[in-house]
Image (cartoon, rainbow, N blue to C red):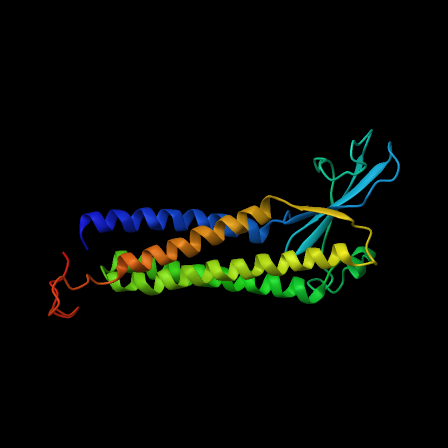
Length: 224
């Protein structure tokens, strides 16, 4: 592999590394979405909630006044009451889980995110072996694993988005307003970096194309 192409590969792997860090932050954090009820009276306590793939946290915030009659744009500060979802912790008992969580959506989003991390691990192993053993062909499966990891994150994001939508539309919940928080943004950014980085790495690791019409890929001179 030429020095120019090696530099491009390293830059691409650095972008993928950033995507891996963002993906890890998104999976382990619980700020995918922030939910809040509509406030009919001012000078009351706003009970907001934020949740991720594994658990939900509720926070009571004292509100002096709100211009739009909601606590949507308030900063979640103070102590949080966090508990894992009932289907991840059968011994947990909390009424909020019975009404606000969609079991099928939550389990699916978490499982797909775990698959994404699995693809990341396999891709990283292939990438490390390609440099240690001087086997450039291992970059191709690594690139595919990273691209698959990005696609899994995209599916997980969409499943989570549908879960939030169902919770807001449900008549059994008090949550009327929502917005996506930084964990959701990390997952979206990780998808872009992993998917585009994987495709770029795959293109860089492919053998040199023939330069003459009568030359095949097998006849082309190898790169040094």
